[in-house]
Length: 243
Image (cartoon, rainbow, N blue to C red; front, top):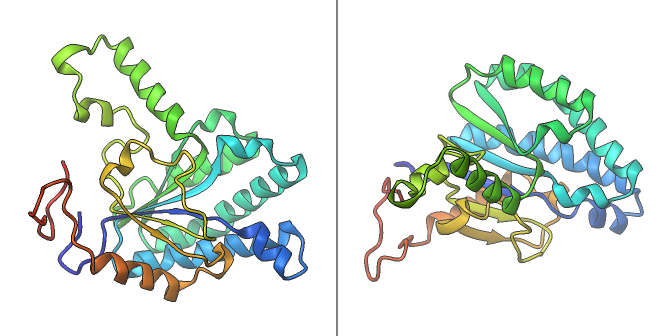
């Protein structure tokens, strides 16, 4: 769904390329992740300024647990620092934090920090910031299917709406635009159900270099597209949805 200004209601980003950005500069991967965190802060603020209502950042996938233990530990240290340092900014900008994924599997200190910010920002309504953490699109679909089965929802009662209500994104619109940085051209198990009608934007820019100008370039590209949602010869007008 696009608002009257052409800004997508929901932008989802696969933040890729921190390690390659660092390697190309003779830096450690940890410096790449720190630079990536700074980029994320700036993009959250710019999305809020532009009127994006929902922003989802692919922060840590289930597959990322296979990375070296010291790198995983650093990623969660950066996450905790972000939570502690950005809480007031989120409140000032009226941004609500939500987590997509299995929080129970995260380190205790990360769960504490996330829960604190989630509770403190629960009343915020201008923008929702979703962090996909310990997230897997396939697992999310299986989780929703099991929840529906446990409720005895079958047959005609098993609708797209009923299924979507069991997803982590329940109550939020599907992403209009999915951005992936660093030149990779795949979804990587990200928002598989929700991405059915999303527009995709791929850039060779590594995530630490993805700044406000890069974001605006992606949004301009999106605004120049004609979204058809499978309706032959019939463009959906601004404000229509795929629901």
